[in-house]
Length: 344
Image 1 (cartoon, rainbow, N blue to C red):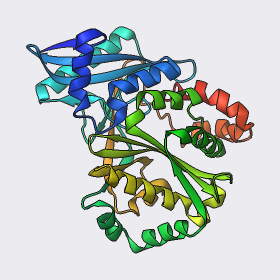
Image 2 (tube, helix red, strand yellow):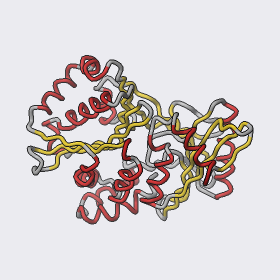
Image 3 (tube, rainbow, N blue to C red):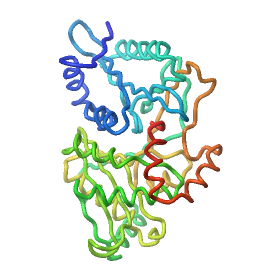
Image 4 (cartoon, rainbow, N blue to C red):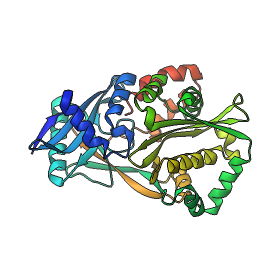
């Protein structure tokens, strides 16, 4: 067993082919490497475990350098989990060992390998988060019948409120507008316009934007979502709804539309994304009949003394969040891109 770096040429193509048929999330695909490089200049390290000339495992690490959030290595940059694939435990352990050695050579603060219900030996574990997975077996009609009655009623409410829903890559700019308005209200930085432009360029056949308006196409933006597809899994990457519209249930309408679209694509699972344990966001997702899945964040500390908690819910960010909410939207759109580059 040997580990090679698949940075360029034919080995990169072989690495991409191995991952491409396995990855349920676009954040593991080679195209995602281009997205984050084009938008933020983030460098990647692609590792392959070789048994002779055959690839038996891969690991994608992204190197973050930021004046506030530090220097670190992480899998699944701007994703929830992923980046590590292997045929057997030998390949897995060899990849993880090389990742640790790389972290030491680069002198990073820490290495983070994000997995789904997999704890790695020798790592410190953070289990703040859960994913919420919805089984799409039987198609949209069968899913509808399995939904709790209260959730179906909320969807029906959203359908009768006079909202207009548009989908397609041409809705990118509208999505960007409502997304930033919502994130500013939360006091959280958000991705740059260049990030979403790169998503459209590199993931054309695996992405869709959805936008809800109050009334016809010229009325107020209400909610938006970015939906991804890969190997039978649909992923709710971003979903937002402006709070003042919540009583009218546009978020329920949006989620149900994404579920229908995912079934139409032949997906077997709808991943509603990451939420913190005990949060109202997770409660909302569980109300759709989803299965909670533990997200296991494995930290190998190199220079850091403790596991970082880079999350808006961290109390140490309260002052910064309050200040962010008071900034003009035009300012947060510019500054947000510089901050989020370090929150990978």
